[in-house]
Amino acid sequence: MSFRSFLHLRYPSRFVKALTNCSLRKKLAVVVVISTLAQGALASEIVRVDTDTGSFVLEMYADIAPVTVANFLSYVNSGAYENTIIHRKVTNFVVQGGGFFYNPELGDISEINVGPAIVNEFNRSNTRGTIAMAKVSGDPNSATSQWFINLGDNSANLDSQNGGFTVFGKVLGTGMSAVDAVGALQTVNVTGAMSFSDVPILSLSGNTIADADFVNVSMTALSTSSKFDSGKLSVALNAGAIGQAWVDFALTQSAPEAIITLIPSNTLFIDKVLEDMATFDALTGTLSIPELELNGEVAYTNVVFKLTDSKTYSFTLQSFDEAP
Image (cartoon, rainbow, N blue to C red; front, top):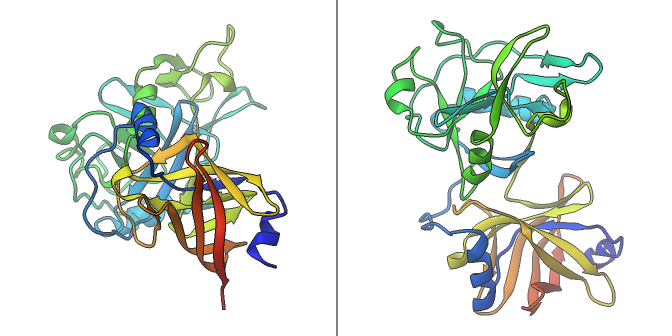
């Protein structure tokens, strides 16, 4: 099946990319301040986190905390973190999740299934925007599923406490805006089969706390290989001076030419060059995708789109090769 005929199926598209003309740059700058670009490509494990206050992207530090990263990704890939809640927020300190979910059948908070505890791998400071593992007081090697994101620089406290809390990744780009939104929420104490203090809530929908009140979390492991999955096309894009991001595109025309259109509001800027990213050349308006996966396998290579309408940020398919 050709790429063009595949697009004929009218799948919506999830794509990553940045654009060329100055007017677009100005529009994107209103939403996102692009930080200084990293020099050189880095191979990384990447996780997308979706919450009720926004989405962000995590880069894993597999080189300095391999056991911790493997443990975290095992929960991500098994779906264990799906629809979990942020169960703790301390202003200017941390937001914490990964351990619990709201069980509507019980009308209470329940604990997720956890695996064995892992060895502590403290190596990097707990600075703002880093993610680390929570653990039992007095036991450095007790981390299982619970994680926390540092809202501030907590190195003076957490780097020396309980063997040091293992930092295993960080929030990329402008993602801390979504985390800070959790940090700004009001908190309540929740009692039931288990008791919790400092639980952030979006609002109170009634006299009792319900699922809609909690900050729910879902996680997905990403790769820089472009792919169709569940009706979406995801592409990690290096757009040079414009930045790097995951961006959604909608398929707006499938015949006689395949055309995709950027959805600017869905852009997740990461501001880091990763290995094997797609690229966008602002001078020629060319979007080049090295590999495109279908159903978990590389089906096409050297996929090229061209910017054909800078006002609507639309791109037209130019060429592709079928994978051997």
